[in-house]
Image 1 (tube, protein in one colour):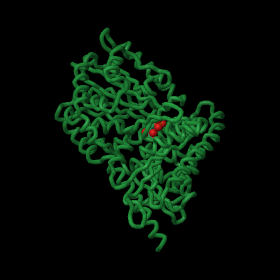
Image 2 (image 1 turned 120 degrees about the vertical axis):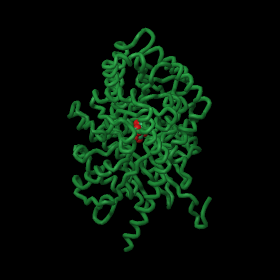
Image 3 (image 1 turned 60 degrees about the horizontal axis):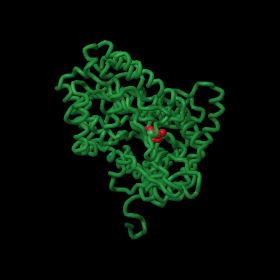
Image 4 (image 1 turned 90 degrees about the vertical axis):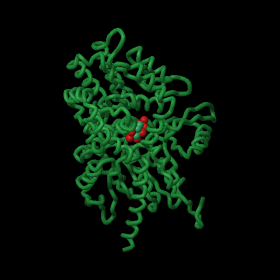
Length: 520
Ligand code: G6P
């Protein structure tokens, strides 16, 4: 529909993120099959009726030929997605290099890469150049699809240059930028060679959003200390031009999880899982296989718990579901073998002929019908976990995950740093009948919102985490109920939909206010 003046009835929202919410598999020269992923952001925006969202991003595959690109563009259009094509060299330098080997670890307080400093310093220059180039490629696609009145919402650390690239092309564009990771203390950010360029580029946006007040405050401090600009309660001011900076904590679509629990298929899975783990308490971890998630620390804490509480050894199981990610980045490969090593050792130490304490499930991603374990690694350890995987149709889908959340007694989220961590939210949404306990890292953004209901831990303190496991397993039903109530209320009232609506309406207001200021 259109208004009389030709403008669309609903405001158009261009969501720009490195990765599109669909994964594409090539079936032939000009045919593609697409699968929509149901991540938080996608469901959040599907739920928002006020605007009409379109996605712009990288499809995650290399498509060197024009026929393939045309066909994929057409297939994606049906899903309201617009692809940005990145060649292999750019992906290597921008995505594997600058984004995931430099910015990601730095923003999570793991520092800049230190091995072979000279090599790192040299490749740093070309990776940064590729980062800017990739951001410009995104900007070109946005520019091509932009119409007056649209809102452009840029996401995450991959696209810090995008606000500037867009405003350089069209200063009248409404541009918001949101960071899904932590923004670190300015003392960390200042170690980055391109620290100022990145800050200036982000400040070109009209509204800059973070998950927590701390991240927003760190960003403002970085701008005042590194760029010498003025921080105000509203944001950052540069020669009379204000960039609004604020916190917008994300949530999940909790209804979707609660509806799923009523699905007969999920009920069936729940029954199976209860049989499989009869007589045992179930502890759960669900993480992308990433250094920031503190997976080795979590498993070592579980080992310490078993060591110190022999009476629990046969009565508890840890399901650690790992999702391989960024497998071309060396740090991620190292982590994968490290986790395998620790899990193997602990299962050797505490396993019996019939059972092991840790079920480490690597959620394979599938390409067509061919199983393609990422990074050349296979589903680990024990026969039982293989049976579990098979009974769950090999890859864990949404319904299976809901069933696992529902049968869990204690969830362990031990991120060393984490922007928000929605696994903790998803667990809470699925626990209204069981009222299990959440052990949550104080370094996850979610600690700000679920802190009163969870047992908060310092994930680096193995003893503290081990003691918290004992405390969680022994917690009285009354205390569990009370803690769960608190978290459940938060998760069901602060939804992803509300998050998206708030950000976009705030962006609209910010732009109107800025126009008024100029007129005055
Ligand atoms: C984090 C980032 C997202 C990213 C996701 C998966 O949540 O904030 O921007 O899409 O990880 O990582 P990947 O590199 O596979 O897109």
